[in-house]
Length: 547
Image (cartoon, rainbow, N blue to C red; front, side, top):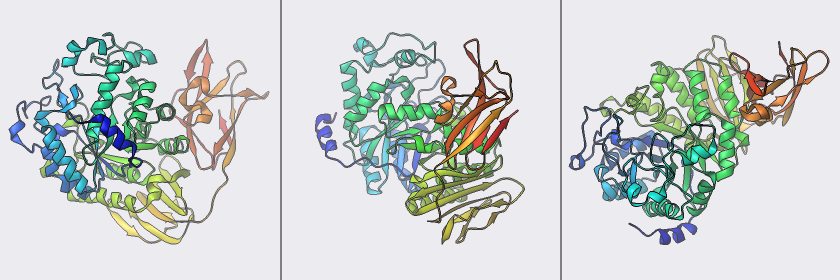
């Protein structure tokens, strides 16, 4: 074990943590078997078994990761872990940990981690380790040696109860009591020691929905200058904003964006879904980051999610690299990996199927993003959005970016927002470089450009919403933006009766889109209208009728 107290002193003198520009996620056991000397549990015929992937295998393929353009790698847990399946479920994912202070020998041990970290440091690629603070393996030694470290063995019954979420067991896994001083010191010191290695800049924190905000805020303060990325597996962006504000974490995975992106592109739902999520970017704390992704090891692979339509995947990647935040690509995306449910979505990396054209597509987007900070840090505005067309603008200083998606059968007019200095490309099935902004975008085309800005717009817009109905049922407008309650009914905008119909006045930032529904409170219960979301456009809607 290393020296966490010394590490804490050194870290307190370090600069602020760097935010990755492009994160590449690796499920270690499924990436590559770099050393057969540690293949003690390997059975490649068992989809729930270990397949031999290790840290040596990652080191072996750093040229490929560098070619993609990734400047940071997130590894699934590599700590001492359970190695036997549990009731038919495999342990290869690493989230059933035994000891966060030790590296699993079957994955290469500490020596292999040091070698990988050193090699990454030489390439200016950073490393994010996956910390499991909420629970341990079913049969971890500490369960018997330190039974007082754990909450009582109770399952979560009410998933809306924050006490149950943070003190009861997830899938029967022993639940650590982070309020116990000994537990806290174990988790803190186990984390700090790994920051002594080169290239390791922070941690992905698993399952923060099941961790108390006080613990997250404390450990965030006690691991200074490390980049902490939380996983809150839920689709409410307002809950994400609140979590960031309550904990001070540097970043969260943007599951709301994932759902909007896949619904809009894969299911061909309205592109306004994406617009409504990006309209919330301005409400996050300025020093926070959204990590945006197409898939991971807990959801369907993006190609399967999009019904094997490769064009949809390439378009999703274009959007991913064009909007604010940190884009993340999961291993195997460049090989067109498929799989809808576990363990199919956690298949081995097929190195024989790496697609050079797909790899180049990702690398081109990554290089363009790295060159233009406005893509990473610019403030989003929605210039145009409907079912099949979308124009997103971002601004940072004098720079302006414009992303236009046109999957319709009619040309899309592009506003004159740029001066003559333009750099970018159009995309159909391949990327083609352009040096001027076209006045229209043809059907089935996309474009991404960066230029100097021309003009600014008003800050807020007032929209009158008129709703037909009866006087005895009060319509509540509940939607994605805070002005409409952030999808929380009791925080929504209540309408007033004007003698003829219901009326609601909304003040929205210019160039935003808010998804919303009409909700009625009947007998102390909220009843949502049927059908898909409605959308308010602050740059076009002045009066909005609901009949």
